[in-house]
Length: 293
Image 1: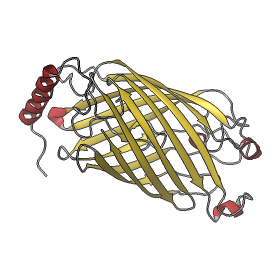
Image 2 (image 1 turned 90 degrees about the vertical axis):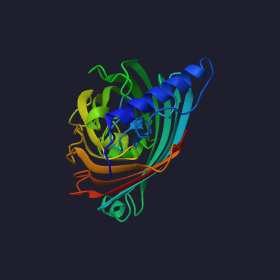
Image 3 (image 1 turned 90 degrees about the horizontal axis):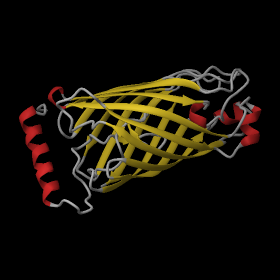
Image 4 (image 1 turned 180 degrees about the vertical axis):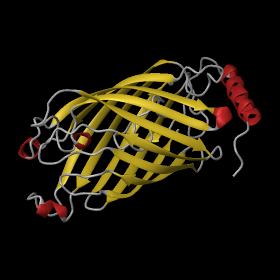
């Protein structure tokens, strides 16, 4: 597929700007370049599949309102994860998101003493604010878009998570994310620092016998735009390890995201989630469908 040329991209940016000027003062939907607002993460925020980015959900510009819904399925060796949710973006400045996660232990649940098919469920409520820069439209500057955010997570299974050594069944993550889209190089780069106590993203509770304090973790993403509709890339997310009964490994993936049109995109990935609850080498696939405006 033909790479995006800097001339074509510049023309697109100018066209979007001219359209916005013609409708100044109106609330608009749409306007962002395809895929530059990311996809939906497993926690509901805009970003990659595993890591949160600084971009704001929805295709709106700074005069508009956007929204998106998603459904995601992750299947690895001994477990599966289903997540679905929605996010709203306001004036490309504020993002509010909500997601429901269902971590199905399948036959492994019986081996863990939880019962076959036992499912950990978690609700994630998030808020993100862009505080600096613009990932796409500030092409004459190396300054990235920077956002700060928080995610409240509650799995409402206190007795179960305490049985595996966790301190609580709810907690809050805080993060700072920086994202830059280099149009002339067809690159999307992101780095996020997250303060968290979460075990397996909160699905196994928060804190544990090995630690109950906030620990900074890194989330990195890099994508290459093969065309305006197609991006390939990789992600890496470090994890704390608070539970003595099972070491927690970092997450990583190789992904492909395709924008069918301005309202629909699909993401597929090979994921490696490492060891989970004593079961090793949890590798498999990730599939996510997102619709929005």
